[in-house]
Length: 225
Image 1 (tube, rainbow, N blue to C red):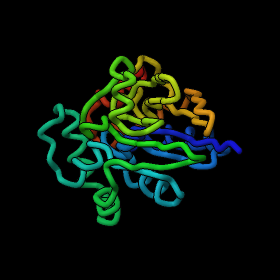
Image 2 (spheres, rainbow, N blue to C red):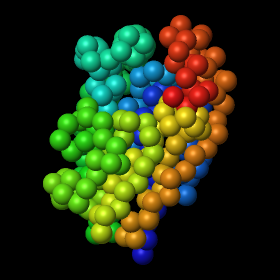
Image 3 (cartoon, rainbow, N blue to C red):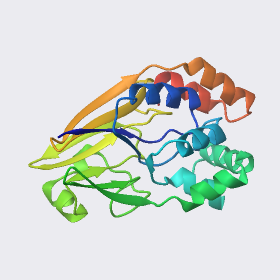
């Protein structure tokens, strides 16, 4: 019997995008989130509350961790500004929720071993792309399916009976396509469907401006970068 997983990552407090994606994932048996619930966007508490209200499998991303620690030394100026704004606006309960999230998770669905990380199996903050995925890389990761986020770019690589995928970003795509990204993973077949859905970018942009976050964070949503 097959199960259908919804795979998402990098919501970045973009509530309108997250709501549209969740509508698309309504038929899934389980939803996995590969980190970065917050950062950049204007609705961190609302996104976290929505995640908490569901039985999602969630890990922390680098923005989630930085929102708790307030260590923004590895971020550019506008990302750092948004992270400090996020830290100031999150409720204590939601800061505690982010602090308690694991940085990686292993699962077994339908006999298939899955590793979900935000960056890479070696480094939670490392960016990896499809060209990095080799048979040796997947063997070292010690899983049949590797799920990553962080780069905000969709890709799928299948080598033999092993698979790696990045569902792209819900809240801030960076592949020059502004539509929110997500993926379906059907097991045990290991079938991946990379998907996009339009959302109200104008609404998110207005929220960003109203929150007095850096204007570039609104402008870049229109160009998918």
